[in-house]
Image (cartoon, rainbow, N blue to C red):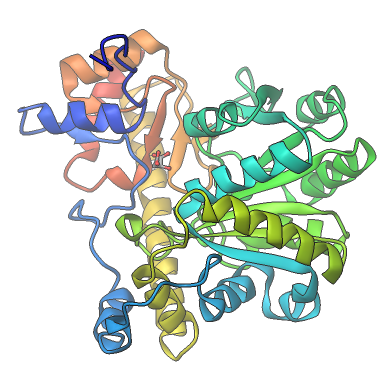
Length: 395
Ligand code: LMR
């Protein structure tokens, strides 16, 4: 009686397609949809450091108390050092508020609610972006886009982005992806980030970073360079951080919302409001995943974990190189070198929607209709099928 008027909602563009993949009975189907790192056997296995940390914290994990509203201080201390770098974190943490969140998505949502109440109700995301960015920000305000990617040149387009930023109203909250841009795989260089920071300051735009892939692009330090640059330059910003990918802790929902403030007094006020948003949302975060991350980063396993991240990054880059090499052989006269500089798990392949539909229907190769592929969904067994499918629809 109460639900009669409820209409059917649309399927999620990413999770909905994964459901369709799971329901497909073809044995040689290939899943290039969701951004989950897969090993050569196409499993999303626990990292060995995560497995060892789980064993080590068994005792401590027995504690059943609530965490504080903004989570475990020891965990936040470790992730703060990882993102900002120990020296900058040490020098700046007096003005950086941090709250443990339920994955990166709730950091985005909590940050968006905070901004909507105290900064402004206008948000801007890159065109294109991760579809959930728009959905999250639409809950708290009006969402605009700024140009980011040149379809014609198949690369990041700085001048288009800067003109897009200049057209936004002051106090617009601008979502910036730290590294490994989702879905294009195209990132600005350090010099380009410096230009972006300058424009954001001049136009009084509020930077809101989404850092979900630290270590998957060029390296742990390199992938955090833009957040560190903005912080050193004294820009106020928010950062939504996810440990899903680099700790392979997808189902544990481990994230952080950082708010970089000008001084300790502002940090205190900002933190007090963010805590109120959290308290009315999920009250306080879950403990298990954060204890794992804290154990790894705060002890001798940290070195081994960095090696595991390096190995994941290495496999992604090998698969991308192999894809480009094989596509060039299959599609004589076509050049796929534009995929080579892409960073992280995703690459944007130049495909029309009808070509993506053919890949799914005829070849069982699943990817979102944007043409984004998860390169980590490739292995030595399925890559030839993917190249054949792509070659056929691109003919
Ligand atoms: C993706 O873009 O596939 C990932 O970030 C997973 C998700 O939540 O959509």
